[in-house]
Image (cartoon, rainbow, N blue to C red):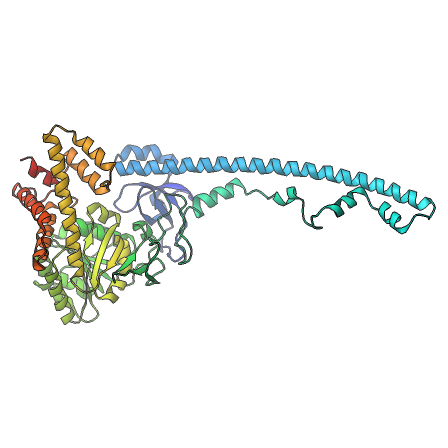
Length: 552
């Protein structure tokens, strides 16, 4: 994109990495966020997403001048929502300007009216002064038989007597004068409402959170109304809350948007596994300024991230040995063990001062075994499986469930904020694995129930779309419900969460129930449906493809 003259508050099209041009607004960056060295750039808040980023000036174009051009080359639903958000923002700006103009007109009329009254008052004073002069002259020329009281009374003008009778204190301005204020210029109001007031920073602990422009409130911390115990940790943008349950959560603002205000850790980050979840995580780590070295079993997947600034590790052992904190996100317990214990694996690079964070969804026994071998070599270990899907991973909106080394959990704060909206610390190793399996058990069972309902509606002659509309108006309404149903109705089973992985999680959750003698009949029934769907060669489709198990 060609370089242009831009300034604070301008609406622009910004090009970030491999993403298409996106509408945004140039805003003030957080005070503690350093500007990148080198070429001139601006801090941009993108509409319709939760992203903020420093964008080089040559990657920016004025919004209005290129609107038609951009709309022609971008047709996606999210893109259209972003454009709609800009138009809504502009509409609100016009309303504010009209209100400002109206207020200025009223102030001007009030000021003119007050000035007119002032002139009338001055004229009255002048006339009163003349009358007073005449009285004094007559009193001086007449006989001096007038008593002192009469003389004093006669020497005062009607205006002065009226002032003495008034209860208002001397020096206090008249009511009209007191209410008269100098109106703010419409330009100043527009700058304050559009750029500063609308783009708010995290309040202090005692300051209530206020929301202004709906498109520019995402730097506010996610806060509970009555946290049990709260204390600041790591950075100003990080809040750790300890609930009565003993669990702890780092509540990063609502998304990667906030992530624009993150001060990235100076530790070198490694990442192993660039699947559906890992790819989005690495992208956000890089976007927020972290130094990342990547490795993937299929090396070609690393190329895109190398272009974005990542470094390439030849083996897991090499990544661990050259980085301070290494994250891993792989498919199942076997893959997690092979990654650590296999040839040129993680364990070979572990030594004192090396940290390992496993983000895979596995069972508690597997993660406990991995923790033991890592710690035995002098390393530190944290499990941190994530709740979400590919889209949430790309958007930096994952929920991280962590357990293990508490100090390492806090060391990972800038990384967790880059990849997710919230993270929870759940205590000792194994707790996060158990919690993650329970979460996915609920999600997998719910998905199977949705598919069952849609197919039952079909075979009984009911409209599936009407069923979805009804569900979306009731208590079950959710983004998950709407997206999965829409995909089913459109026949779109492109993987956002692989069917084979949700079936794996159901199987592990059922085993968890067996280990403590707890019945899981609903999960067991759902698991059978997913197993049938795997037999129909749907493993690599989205979990919503379970729908097909009911129509075959």
